[in-house]
Length: 450
Image 1 (tube, rainbow, N blue to C red):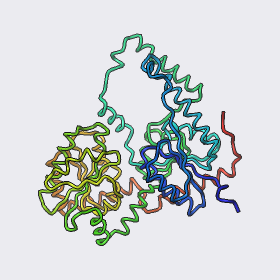
Image 2: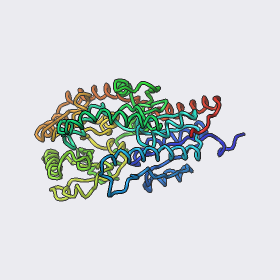
Image 3: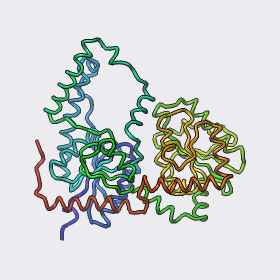
Image 4: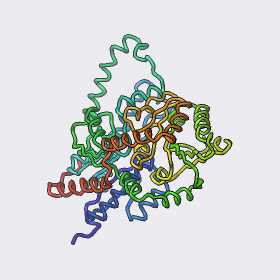
């Protein structure tokens, strides 16, 4: 019998924020319980205390490395050619770091959240060369690449740099860019990446639903096996949906301090200040308008659940409202959504969770933020762009049974296209990994490339 410490382990690479680790934990548990495979986790940031405790309680070893930093001294970092030299140096460092990690870890499989990130791309490439199975897991709702391009434009504005450059620079640009790309290829640092979560070189890509598989194929993700597995987080939501009843809802409400007899409107915020898409003044205006619409009926209560990247201090103004608006910095979203009556957000992955838990949903885009219109085309929500339309949507959902029935039908259609909602996504992902390890065990081992 093979000792546990001699079994091939699965190396999970967790990137910041720690929320990505939540995607991995159910798979780690399933690999252990069903397949007898141990796991390890590699962080390239300092994990939070909850992450440390989650792994310690499971007996899962964790390693921590630092990503390559700039090599060019600060006094000359803005000099001509310095950014290019710095980028090449960081790529070179990342390749060496990836090699040392694989030499030390010798995993049976490598799992990443995104195979286009700096360290992950080198880990994946070298694991492939060693014959180690590689898998990228879609960890959150992913927009089409055109939307990400619009977001960057919205955040930082556009310039006409190319048009303002002198003629010699415009003529030499393609030549120098070509030389740079050729140098990267010569040094083994060149990647032909597709702009997407799974646009790197991992052999397999586990996605939430068929709509995402089609989206990634359209974006050019072709040189890997794309498997529609569903998502581990959705398994927890599936169990919540099966178990929720009046008593469970009452218990959750009591734990979070909600009034038992109120209609709870739960607003899952987005990191709008962190992403620099609206101002602090606009944020307060929007929340105030929503609070006024909700609280004009005293039987209704507005609750804000903050995004993990947000600072509760930015919402201190909510305590000054009359009545105050409840702000919850951290919570288990599936149970919080299950306990509410109406769910509100803009473009969060939590909108899908609310659909799975059969909650009526309003999506809002008060400030023409490009990606906040995402669910307008997907369906399953009442989408609004003004404060008045939000108040109207609230009244329609609460007072019109036909509106609620239409939304329920649309939600079922969205779930069918964007998820595999049957409680077995974790099983499918763990089985992919275990089967790949079994196949690799029958293949002669390679050596770490120089």
